[in-house]
Length: 466
Ligand code: SAM
Image (cartoon, rainbow, N blue to C red):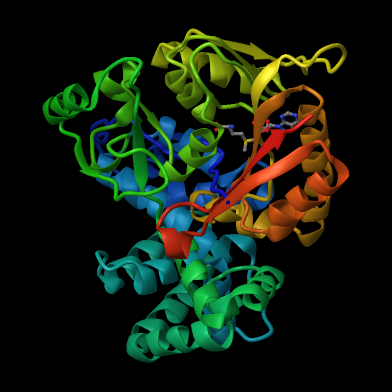
């Protein structure tokens, strides 16, 4: 059996809406001009993309900070996010388009970013008239100290406006002939996936990774029930859908179709639901914790699976939630508090393996390459390196070894990842079992996005026989 595990820390960004500020006449002070410019979604997107090029923070974090201090309407926030994520996801294809018109001439980063933003709007966004996309980009260049390059940017973008149909056809061909560029993924990863899945299914996976992720809410039965939650959502203006049947209980997870900023809703603040992809429930349903059990969640933060386990245990028993930093533990505490979870003991001290093992069930939701949740992590494809899978395997085996020593004979252990890679999943569990004769693998399950319609995940259910 296998899994899907989205780390549970899904990038769901919600922002309070504010009215747009009054526009000053131009040529006041530069500082005021900056304040004004910062209120434009394209300006903010460009700033985030420049920040991304310059430092080590995740794009999602940069965007969240930028939007937190901006005064944008919900629609403008949506546009800003779409521009940033779209340009990051699509950077190979966008750079290919730019290189076609500027052969052998590398552009300064600021110019490259504006060209990417303009081209993304022309070829990937339906709702912006292409001429408006060009005009806005050129004006933005002038406002941001790129007056000398504005004509060049205008010429490239207008050139493409005259070739929209042909260029769309070229982009479609590129997906077949050079998928790493056409779908904007690293070459090595595309080659690895094609070897395993072949071109057609790999194409589906690459396409999946380029689609915006859905938002799912898991009902928290410790606080409410499905009928009350739905009634409350009706009052709050939340549009939802039931999720199709899967390897998780029915009517536990809802897809949120439209909603006000979630953090502002009483149903969220009161802990009536937790945001997590349905695939993340599989590891817990395979572990099957019972009320009164002593359970260890070895890699617990931010607590998506911990809090679901606490619900299955009806808050009865002991659930030790371990993770490695105080910041990560804080997330577990916050989520437990909001969701009314009382049986969890968060800790940074790894449980000791001396003496008699005390745990009935252990979840090892290991740190992994996250290749099953690529559509939720826009930067991931550009950060991940082949050698990291080897490094992660060492950590994953160490964590399994540590957990093995803590499990009671007759107890159950689930190993899970949100990776699609066999090296971190089936092969790793096979290696573990061959080195631990007192463990048996009872089954494995894998969820694959393009087949199952949810994030990728792998789960192995193990038992200690002696
Ligand atoms: N189970 C979590 C949930 O459902 O919300 C997601 C866990 S995430 C996949 C992996 C976690 O492992 C991260 O929170 C990370 O901090 C933690 N981690 C990394 N190295 C670890 C280690 N050596 N021991 C324990 N946890 C570790």
